[in-house]
Amino acid sequence: MGRVEGPKKEGSVSKRVRWAGLICIGLSLAGCQLFGPPGPQVLYEERFSSAENNPWWTGEQEGYRIWIAEGKYQWEVQPNMVPGVRCPSAGSFEDFVLTVEVEHRGGIPNKSGAGVIFRSTDWNNYYVFVISPTGTFRVRKVVGGTWTTLKDWTASPAIVQGVGVNRLTVIAVGPSLTFRVNDQEVYQTTDASLTGGVIGLYAVSYTGNEVMRIAFDNIVVASPAP
Image (cartoon, rainbow, N blue to C red; front, side):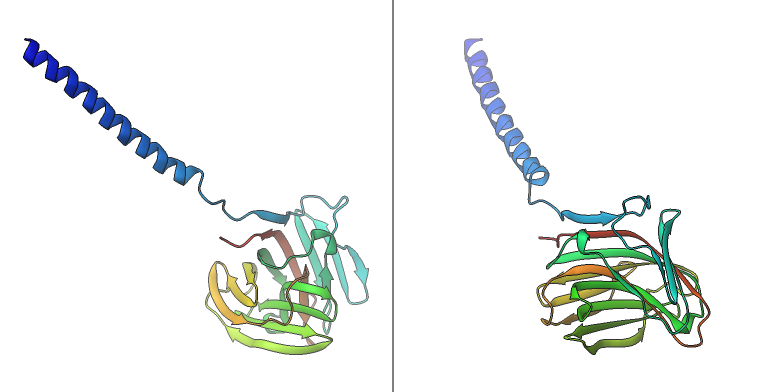
């Protein structure tokens, strides 16, 4: 009995030690998953849930009207107008992931466009990413008041055509600029002209258009993925 019992006790202790070691390893691995590098951090967001004390400009100018209602940043733009709104109080960003929902509500598709402004230091220096209800997009920059087209109007199946909502994403990390529509990459380029600045929104209504109606929502600026 003694010979049998002794090894059993010794074996039980040994097994417990081994199991404890495995549990520690499991907890360690779980800890790596739970407490690993942090994900992207939200730096700014705007849901347009209220017009009261909202930092985004509202009002009426010759050729366009902008207001907040129904949880949307709504624009009406007359033909031959190119309005834009910057929001310095949102902060200045260098490397970031910017997303915004753009809803086309009315206007002749091939004479309408809307999108985002980023890395803007003033109205003479910024990038702009615009989509059209015809299913095309364009990327431009203005530096020192001089316009340059980085990617002219190009068709993409990622864009919802006609009346509908599109989700635009800009990923800016140093000179690397990546553009997505509805989570699908449509263009990538490298440009070091502008390294940081504020965000904004943009619309273009060409000559011959009807009154263009668009709405923006769910603006989020986050840190890039590590």
